[in-house]
Length: 472
Image (tube, rainbow, N blue to C red; front, side, top):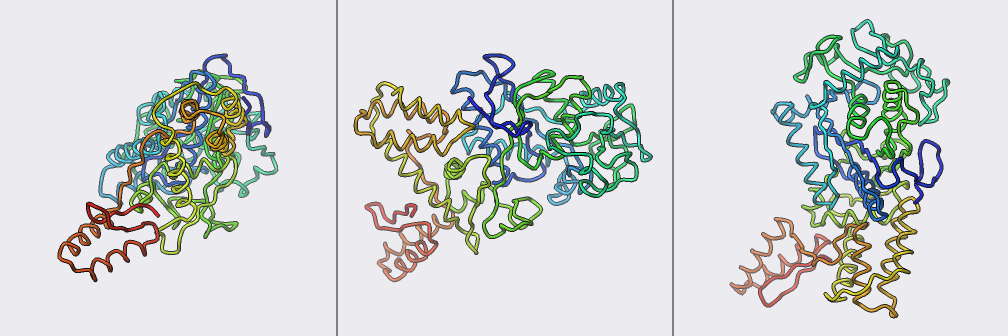
């Protein structure tokens, strides 16, 4: 199995520390709002990774943190207090906001058929662990207290700082990468513990040796990953936006505390999902602060199945930018509609194979394994499935058994009947149309039929039980 290692910028043979077990850490969500589909693309890629590792016989110890504190979640220790903003927006406590959006995110994972991590530690449950790591960094001479009382990491004292992002000292000059902070000795230094916040008093604060406050964003991942995976582990994942600062700072914290190098053997990062209409040098990335925030529930309300989006992501390599097109009135995606049609046809082909299972075909499994083991080449893996379905020399029973084995990685539930959930407004129109037909008001029935079909995503027809609506 080969994976692209961001640390070396090369595709490398995967050799875990333990021949049978893999330690996998994935940066989890900041739970102040719903995850958008750009966020979810990263977790889909990570799910393909875990499933591929397990397909290849590894036992995966999968950890994903829940960031339910991290007031200043900007990489540069600046920006807004997102938990506080969420609480004010919804007139709830920050604790209620954190719990609500944690459950919403886990629900999105289930809808997308993502395997749940073995461990999902919350930052608020591990504050003491973070304090202990900061104390160790302090003992090792890597910290200082600024004039504002905040505890900073002194990056000038960590020899390998910037290695992951391939940053040199020239790139770390004040103003080029981070907001200038007069309390920092070096522009790339970052806060480990806040006692002074520009947002005033916070609801989430804890006592510490340096004063009452809260942890910096980066420290939680270093502390919690080492708690569950040890001082050194195999793979750390996240989005490409984590490379220059968050993951760079994680390495400094972890290796600075434990003295081990490398802390993580392989770093894997997923590319952005961008909106076609916004694809410019600036503002292409989907984000909660921009006017391009699309959630999974929105796609569902528009008639798409979450597995349509999983299929959509499956068609592109995780290290390639994926463009998501969106109609002007934000009611349809041509690309996602195409993925829905393709997934439905693929599922139907598998269902047409029948229920009798046979023998897993070794030649096609080898082709499939070679694809997924080549840095998660999922588009090629999907092509192998179609090639198998078209091979007349293989019996239907053998095809079914082989495809079910492949689907343990694809996660498309290909042997299950697709159940279409109609949006509420479509359901209401169906009721109104059936009532019109019962009254023989054919003009109104035709009018409602036209409204349903003008939405562009549905076909309306008359069936034995009344109006039938199916995806276009």
